Figure 1 (cartoon, rainbow, N blue to C red):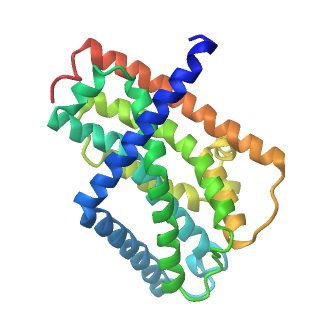
Figure 2: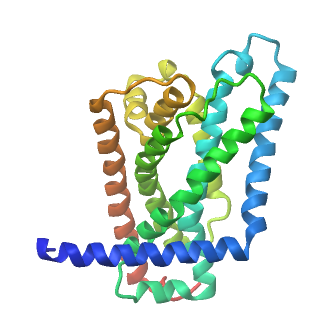
Length: 274
């Protein structure tokens, strides 16, 4: 790819994002109850978890400790953020396999990986708004919460950078979906495992896992959001640059894995049949 082609590629990406935004708006208009019901049940699940544990455990232990409830709420909202992103990629591939549009995408003039990236960017505003709606609902339902929505702009920047890293995970999920089509609840189980990742005590992990924890975009983003939305501090420019590098590195790895799996799917003719 030469530098002279960059303006053309940028123009094509803008057009794809525009098309995906229109597609997402049409989808929300056509199926509003699907999005509302998803948010409603995600909200009820965490409320049940919090009040259930508070009822079973004595005061001063577990989730009732100061800061633990906020960490669980933020982690849960981030898990919903990850799940919505992942379902927007691998879930749509599964649907398009049924409707036949996956084959149309695979033979279009745009790469399938580029289409998925445009889809992720187009859906990001909706997912960010949903994230803050969920946080607002939890603030109402959990009096005394230390979560503040006064620094949403800084928090949105952290979500944007973290989303780049999530795109890497979504590429891997999408590639697996290309190969196996119907994956059931496999990815949902992995997404719920992220909740434990946010809740786990880093200090109790082996050193090698601590290093992974410190460089994983989801946990880095969680730590930054905890600071931004509960105890606002000015992060150093170095930490922000480091965060950006980690996220883009994860996306590059995900893109590479997806391209390999897409090549395998094409070689076995898996893009033209369900």
